[in-house]
Length: 181
Length: 191
Image (tube, rainbow over all chains, first blue to last red; front, top):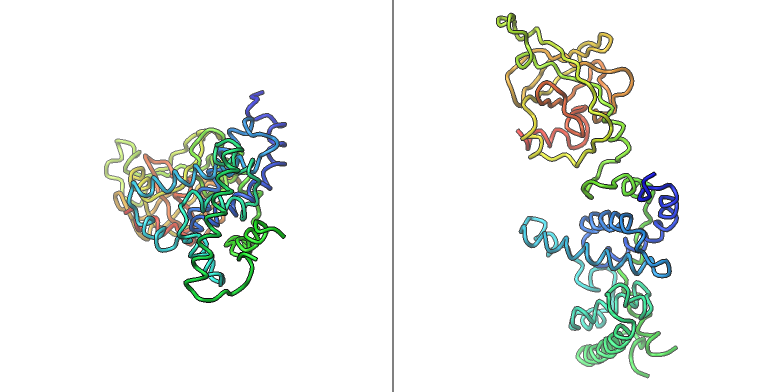
């Protein structure tokens, strides 16, 4: 029997997949438009299925995020290259970092996240939205746990700085959360 | 609570995926595990399509396969050819207008006027491509006809869109009930 498609492998994948699908769906919904998210989810899952044997058992979901991240980057690249209509939709419809969700009143946070470097903002998203630990973030980004930890620390610091700036400019604070004591 | 916890909580409240509806994952999972070697992108349930390739129908396009000695045969006398099934190894990719335009040498809209055993007769209402014909007869195998979009088989009185290449009905989402979602649009943009 072809070991690649053995029943055992299928069963193990079926057991692991629902958690992966749910997590990756959220990951993509936070970062792209719904149509692209659907495509990339399918593609990500396919890669996971093919490379299932490489998946680290202790970090299945972060590993899948890493795959999704690459698939999403590919999707965006090929779309830019082809310059299709979708490229316009992407620009018009794209969730602009945090601000995409309609009922998010936290303008200061939106502004602050928007003014961060893309890598810093992504680190913070992985940390807060995907709720990953530094070592899991390291799996996603393909860096050492130590590096992820240091970068995350700095990114948080920068976000706090930006939040303070945004709060000062606006002249008010909607909530005290996130501000310094 | 530390600063970090506060910050994380504040970010979390801004999570755009917080109220993402749940998804039935079984179909996605099935299509993933079925697609072991071919192209990754597919939006049609693969099981259906795999079953679909247990082929049924052959379209008799009279001008392609008419016997030489019937050169004067009227268009109302099409011939019917039975083809063998290609087996289930084939897989379908998502139908596209470009592919349809390329592959089909005959495409028409028609209403089923009669079914005699395994032979389905359609009255042609519109020819999208190929020489005109009044009537087309298609061989329909027994009960397995999942190759067709819609109900999966020809039924008397219903309208169909059928595309064919060299006398053989194109399946994989290229032929079916005229009311199938998207099928007419596909024809309109292909021809």
